[in-house]
Length: 381
Ligand SMILES: [Zn+2]
Ligand SMILES: [Zn+2]
Image (tube, rainbow, N blue to C red; front, side, top):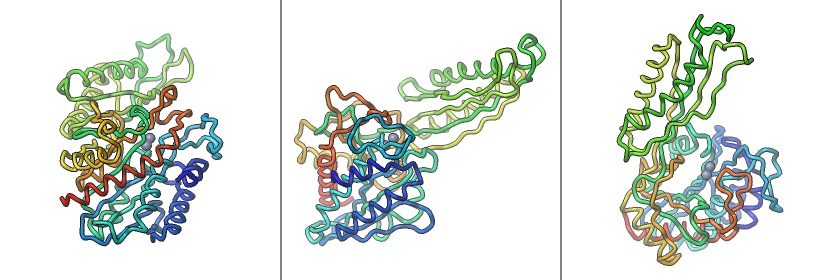
């Protein structure tokens, strides 16, 4: 696992560009005597199946493959060799732990209660279509039909050696919007001659926060953030157009729909009141991730047996981040859990240039996947 992890970590690749990574996964599976399926249409996922001796459920285990546009500052011996690219979200750990679990399972196929499906999925970080949806379209849950799906993510908030689980809402739906505000460009000293796109854009940024506080229930978490504002060329010229880019995070499907409609309405009415023209583009990203109660309980029991009762914590709060693992859970039960990589004095978070999870996470990650598989295979759906 250490060697695999170093090879993945040194050569990080962005979403839908994971060709070397894919080739490494294929080679590693080959060494383990597992026949991988790859795709010749440009999709970079790798699928493999370990058929067990027993007739228990089919459990799919998923690892994501992509890295981020971050310049690594960890000082590790095996730091990224690709400028401006880094495994800053720990997907190198996820892949290596899944290969480690496969290395344990492959030679013991005959003893396994059911079948295990391995999913190495590209493009988790991509944010819109992602990699799970194209993988599902290519039949990654078919032949044999998958009964359960399990995934994990390294988490610096959970201490190393522990695992965090959560029933119900665990991660948010993440949608994106882009707003074009069109005013009348001209001299900044004569703003009365036409709608000022800058002023309208500012009103919109402030007005959107009223949606968060007044459109949905205060106990139903919602985030609206504008992350980019582009417009203007000089201090004394009013631009013709200003573009706003932002994200909307929700949990309940009905809130997700309400927020889109409310955002469109609010933006139009603010622009109209100030005489500006506006267009709103709204892109659906990943849905919210809901961990079903029964499968999550079964996995948590398996993890408790493996890690010790005090080392499996129920997470108190959902995360406002998003994960396309949610797409798998829309189809079959299963769970997505947090693999602890937290170490005192090493506070760097996910997507940070200093993120350096301890190596012990490899063994914990593989053990967690094996424990989850075993527990689910003892409990047919
Ligand atoms: Zn990430
Ligand atoms: Zn990630």
